[in-house]
Amino acid sequence: MAPDFNLKDLSNQSFKLSTHRGKPVLLIFIATWCPTCRSEMPHYKSIYETYGQRGLEVVNIDIQEPKNRVSQFAVKYQIPYRVLLDKTGDVAGTYGIVGIPAMVLIDKDGKILSRQYLAIDILLETLLGKK
Image 1 (cartoon, helix red, strand yellow):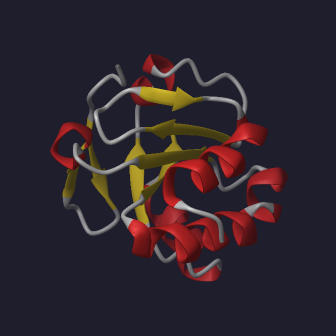
Image 2: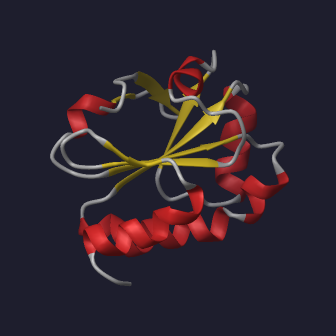
């Protein structure tokens, strides 16, 4: 099972994972200083545009950075999904995130389907239908 957590987004609204049971959730762990995270932004947005309408909840979890920096990053890259602030890094630690970017796909029942970055696209197609 995916460990539950509660983080604030850039609008200071709470996001509690367990309240999203019933639909799949994709957690994308990044940091603004990460070059690969920046270069992968079009891919993340494509995932959201393709599967968000089919019920996938996509959330960006920024690890241990100030809100103002993350906010500027979200505006610059026009991130269309929620951006959460893992100020202490506790959520990333709980999920065993050691390198970024990292993605964790959670099914509608709250079980972790995959932590394998390269397998996420195939699993999304299987779970929610091809693009």
